Length: 565
View (cartoon, rainbow, N blue to C red):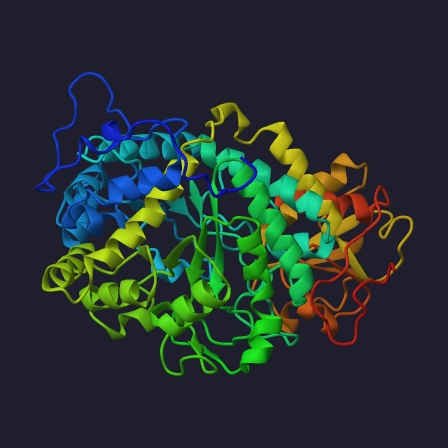
């Protein structure tokens, strides 16, 4: 499907089958003993009408469940370790991921992983992704659990697959270059093809929501926290890239999620740890931060993620993720967005100023439809249910949120699921190579012919995996690689600075943001990414097999956007 399009509300099919399974009590139905459960999705019917009909029939418990998207411990839906059982009971009062889905009538779940070089690792309390086959089995078990419930509605199963530093599933999957690398390439056709290939892989293993791409526009000065997760610092160029990524992902049947509304790019504070402040006036915000979100809306994006950001020009002191002025007055009313709004993780510091139950209620009242990663699932569920029953949280608001969520699910159900053979396949690898090659940038040095001759010695500040990939690519291109002497090519990885530069290096390459290059000598390049595809593209440029067509998507003091204009 080209986008998660709006469907006509003139449906001719009867919808009685859709709602006949809804429970009056909200209690879980037993799992079937022989045949697999049947989804309530009616093929060919109008998703919007299906959603409205079903949402109106849901019980309070089912409505609350639809807006919750927690994580769970364990790499399998039904069989988990004793440690995972204990952790699940503490978090949700149930033993396994499947039991959690059934207990709370969940509308969604997020798969997570944690690694040392991931700037968002602090919110991920567990790791439940290992390989494509394992993820496919996990997601299949989770969907079986959801479809065994009375409403028979599939789950939204999401993850953060931004590519680059924030990538949950790495082993056995094609790794695209980072958003900044694609921004340097500045070719929307290349970006769309790359994200379509990525979406096909995710769909094949049972993931139907990607919390990506990042729509944040960086400031013109280094020091921000988003870095290479962003496509760049020019609002219009970023908008083109965001729209292309959204179209590509969603054409493969996976809902894209742009973040972090209304824009995290001009901040120097990490919202995982404290509340960043956006000091821009409203005009600057509208011109410099909002265009990519508008482009995403026009591309039919499935979800927009609200950021834990203090927007001084709109609602000072209140995180945007809890502000109706930001989410309803600005996003819904002024920008005209009608899709699903999901919070950033509620176990981040700015959201934990309230209890889990209170934060859940406030977030829904502010205009969010999905509550991502509450710090206590049981407390968030109780808080919402109590608020609905007391009247503090109007049931009509819950029906509104559930209707949007269900409509998204029914639209996603229209897309055919790719075969597992697409995972790590040649088409995806080719798309990743094209994206990586388009972004290679020469800031200083020759633009024709080989940049290195004779024996080459590759050194690295913080990324030995990339070093190994580059050495292998250089050898494959016929270049001698040595461990001592030779022409030094220095790789500077994520989070590294001027202290990691080598004064002896003839060539310095930034594998992440290029700001470090302002202090370097010799020939200067950037790949903006440390993927295998990026190292292969870099090798081609170094040995003169390919030109470097990229243009820096962010300004670097003292250097041109490219030496090869």
